[in-house]
Length: 247
Image 1: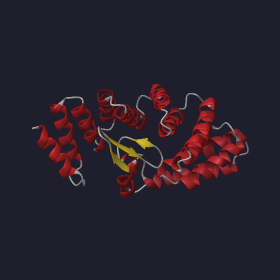
Image 2: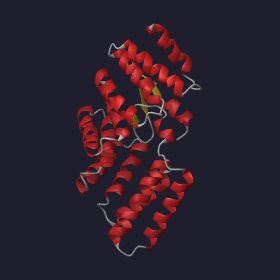
Image 3: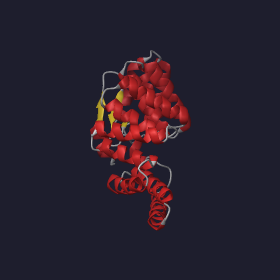
Image 4: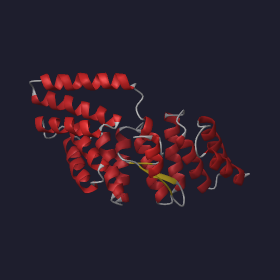
């Protein structure tokens, strides 16, 4: 997804910045525009290899797993058309292949078909309750349907399975923020920052959460760090004004 599309999807709430992205609901507006640390060429090579192996596989379970892995990488690229195609092939080979089900659920979210996403993601969790991705995506589908209590449970489940799942940290922070729980949002954002200290956007959101929690000193520190990491950002002037108001 382009950064421009992300910016169009950003909504300034009364308390915190919350972004509604194509693939999920995320706290940081530009997070998914650069997600994944692997180079594009390497990802494409991995996808090609997985699809080739899947096409040649004679064991249906192995074939399903390979298609599921390919669908995950394609989703990470934002190539949902190819991702869902691979996922459906994986599901045909094994109707309970968890990554394939999760990818189909993510695709439905991208189409704003949240009820359909919920159904298939619940199937994914039934197939493999230890899938952090499926729990996280189900949280997104529920959150989009304003089922905040259940969404919170799913994000918590994803983080219990993978405490370093930054997407879940961001989205659970967004959920807490939407409910006026700025201090809980800040705690989660600080965990995410510790995991990815070079990513700018969470510092701004942490600054907003700190300010709403009554900690002006910490808010200024986070705003300043955001500007340091993102000096050419379109909103730097606005963030500088926020800092000035705290002085």
